[in-house]
Length: 235
Image 1 (cartoon, rainbow, N blue to C red):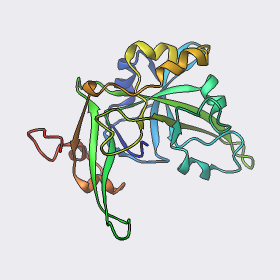
Image 2: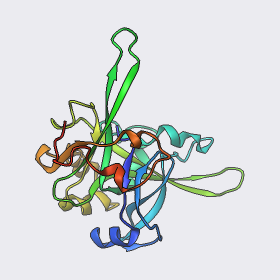
Image 3: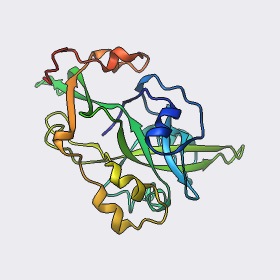
């Protein structure tokens, strides 16, 4: 699962990194992006690659209302191709959701009750400092009462690599630069997409504990992404 991430780069900077045109003017500086927030994503429209704005949490075209978004922030890579909520987007509407890091939590539970008594957040990011190119899907939902169009997205997740496995059984699918073109192109067949849905190798990622201030979605700032141990110890 991916339920929170950092997207501090502006749309203009993301456009340069992903060889795209900025179609929006998002300033960046967001270190605690939460479900239903507006996010920047890379998409292709008629062969042109752009960075555009989407609400995080996919609302399928057949949804009765936009409340679907809160529970569709992630799509399982194993079933997205066949899921009624995601299959149309998997075929024709794929995107890349850039993030400098995503957060996961190591939860300590009371052995008697099973309740969580402590949640320690960790940041996971690329060791080379480049943004994570998280594989995503997007959709358009039309409000039946107002005809307003809502553009939404979701992040694909798969099984974890060995780095993430001790704290969570899912992680975002992160695409390598050589896979961006195939993922974004509308004409790419599912046969060529399936091999891309794999965990990023352990050695390409770093994980470290961060402040529990990130647990509150109202908190914001670069300090949320700073390691608690300045020496860089993961645990």
